[in-house]
Structure formats: structure tokens, C-alpha cells
Image 1: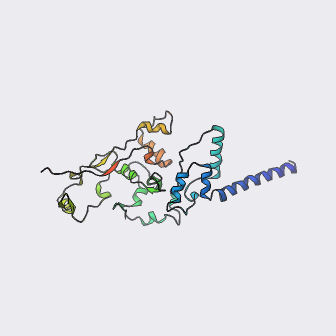
Image 2: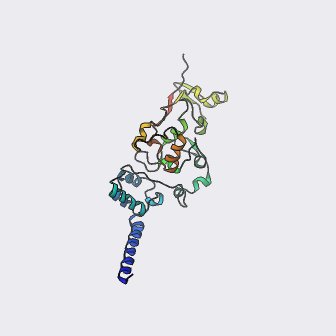
Image 3: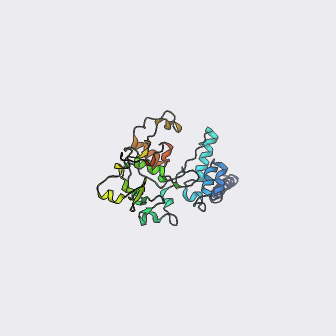
Length: 269
């Protein structure tokens, strides 16, 4: 090999390596540059207004210059471009030091703004209804105007799908604690505490706490797949591929289930 060819090869390698390092360390580190290639302005604005706005995109998202190059190649060769952005956020990125690393170590129940008792540990480490959950299974980007916000609709889907409208798959006390103080209902005082001690069940009064069945229609498959519904009935495989492996948001496929005081038993006069 002549010195000239060797020099050209070395220079080429240097240029490619330099471009790779510049892209990875300079271009990819600036979140605003993501909008140059990706249709993600709405997501960027939500990130900008969120509590994560001081965290670089690649601190959470798995994306490399190789991913970028392969995406551009697909666009160039096949003309294919997915206008519906989908990303993977590894659990280890959420739990890395300095971020949310205390969530599982502390493993304590917290009371949310809605008064719901919640513990991260069982949701993260246990199989729930046959599904291995990720951080993003609950902390998703489906809440309008929010970035990585918990959608209560995802909670309702897991807790109420497949059970009667007056029940929860995990039981009401798994989330709610009965009010300690008496309440006034239509001018009459009612004590949950006394009712529970007397042996009454929640659904004897709360006869309907949900509306909707949350069943994913087969037609939803065609939003992403062409004539590929043979796995529709295999619920375990569907969730393994879509939720556990690819972190798809539940509400991409499932309709919402409404939860609240939809119907309460009233004793006839």
C-alpha cells in the first residue's frame, strides 16, 4: 500500500471519528438540536416546561449517532419515516445516581395529591397482572402538556380492566383509605368508619365506580401493523413485546376507563 493511499485512509478515519465525537459530544448534548431532524416540537415544549428541563435528553433516552445514521439511511433508501416518535428510556437511567436512585431503596408508601397510597417497590419488582412494568409504564408522555407525568388513566386500566364496575382488581383499600371523619351526604351524616366496623363492603354503597371496559380493539393494531393481528388473542405475548420490550404507552391500544363516584346506592324512601 502506497503512502498516499495510507494517508488518505488515515485522514478519512480521522474525519469520520472526529465527526462521530463531535456529533455525540456536541450536537447530541444540546436538546434543542433534536428538533432539527425529529418531528418533536410538542414533546420538546413539554420537556422545556417540566421539572426535567435541566436534564439533557440523552441522560434518559437511549439514542446514539449510529441510531441517527441508520434512521437517515432508512429515509434515504426506503423513504420511510415514522412521524409518531417512540423512544426507549432504560430503567437504569431513571435510577442512576443523582436522579431517582432512592425510589426503590427507601421503598415506602407515599400519599399522592389524590390521597392515594402508593409504593414504587411492588410495582417495579413484581409481575403485575402478567406484565413486567417499567418506569415509563406509568411515567409516560401521554398527559397533555406534561413530560414524564403519571397518567391516572394507566392506573385505572390496570386496576379495573376485566372486573365488574363495582370492583377493583386489587381491592379498594390497596389505594384508598376510608375517610376517618364523618361526611355529609344529601344533608345526612355518614361515617365510613362505623360502616366498615359493621361489616359493610365498599360496593354496597359504591355500586358503580368505573365506566368503560378498556378492551383494546383489534382495529388498533392496524395503526402500526399491516394485516398482522394473529397474536391479538395471545395477551401475554402482546404485553411482553409491546410493554416489557418496547415500552409502548398502554393508551396507544387501550381505551380509557373512567373511575370515580359514578353511581352510589340510595335507599328508597
